Image (cartoon, rainbow, N blue to C red; front, side, top):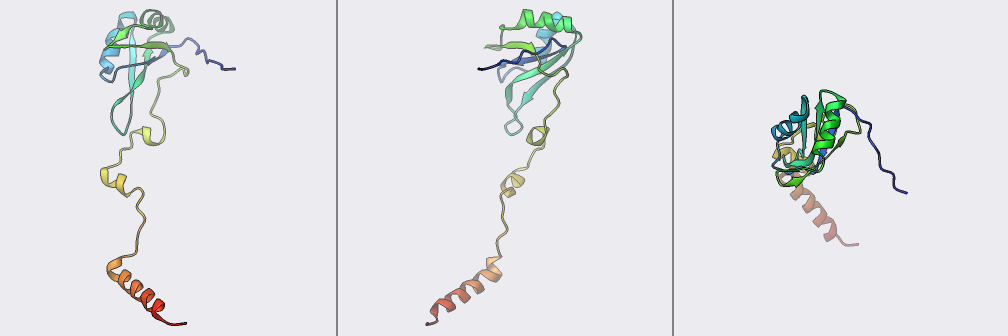
Length: 140
C-alpha cells in the first residue's frame, strides 16, 4: 500500500518541475499576480550550481497561497509544466546540513579529500626498497 502525504494548506508552497532556466524573479512575477510574495527560494545543486528543478514560495496568507495552487498548478513556465502544492513544512526552507549548506570545496580540497599520506619515497622509499631487496637476496 502506497500512501501519499497530503500537506495541510499553509502560506508556504512547493513548486516542482521547474526549468533550469527559471529564476526566482520568474516565480515572483507569476505568484505575485495572486497575492503578496514574501520569499522565493529555488533549490540549487551545490556542486554544479544548476537548479534542482524545484523551489519554495512563501505567500502573505494561506488564502493567497490557496489561490496560487488553484491558478498556477499545471501551467507552463519556461517550457515546463509546473506543479504547485502546499509545502509539507509550514515555513520556507533553509539550506540543509552538509554539502547543501553551500560549503564549497575548492578544486584542491576536492582532490585532497581522499588523499592518504604516503611515505616520502625520496627519503625512505629507496632505503626501504633496498632493505627489502637485500632481505630477498639472503639465502635460507
